[in-house]
Amino acid sequence: MQDFDDSTLWRISEFERIRLETGNSAYIKLGGPTVLPTTLVSELARLEYATNGSDALDVIAACMRHREAALIYLLHHGLVWPLTVFPRERLYHSPRDLTAEIQRGVRELRVHSVEPPGVRAPGHFMSERVAEERHYRHLEPLLWALGLHGPRGTLIAEIGGNAAYRVSPDFHLGSLPLAGAVSPAFQRLRRETASLRAISNWPGMNIDRAVRLLNGLYLLSGLMVLRMHPAARKEPTTQPGGWLSWIRKSR
Image 1: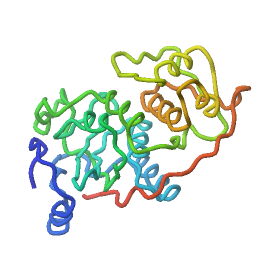
Image 2: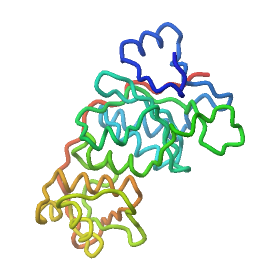
Image 3: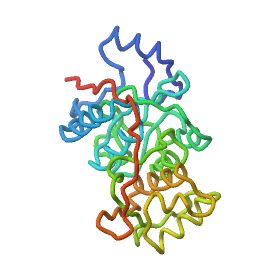
Image 4: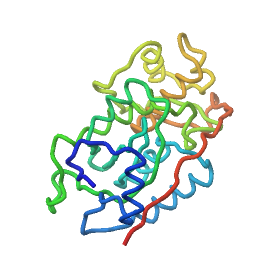
């Protein structure tokens, strides 16, 4: 199987064939830990049993909450996209620019499996598994694109339920893109606290746009979730279905 430095994406059938024949994906080549951290594994298992879904947003959000790097195999258009997230370094590694792909609008992006990272972040003192610099990219644009343009149209569980929302006072969007009605809604959330239903009724907004804005802000650590605020309202949520088929734990 090709190395991380190869920009070729594998078809799902070929990826599965190699894994069955060799017992691994050939992406785990580090001499360090060969298992994911127990806390992250527990969270992924909890999400799997709670949702029985196939949601990339849940997996990536879990990695961000635990600040743990992981290699996530995403299924998209019949191909396997290896995505390694480095929450502490605010980077991700991928043979192709996944952010640009998602910004075009993605309605099918499932998680195949999760493994320990197969590459290290730039600057690591053990540099033998630091990949080509061009395959490392800033994490924020990817998170923002996933929130706004990914397949998820329901709130991430951690921010759902009885709640009101506001943009964190010290959060700055920087150069991340805002378009259409989402832009004034973002600015309004800087000034006032509102429930999901209230946000969805703002000019040009609806439930889907409001959900995506809140999910994106949460992934970027830019969202305040207020449970006891007078504006808090319990919103109906539909849990996404089927996501994690396997957590690889090779030794």
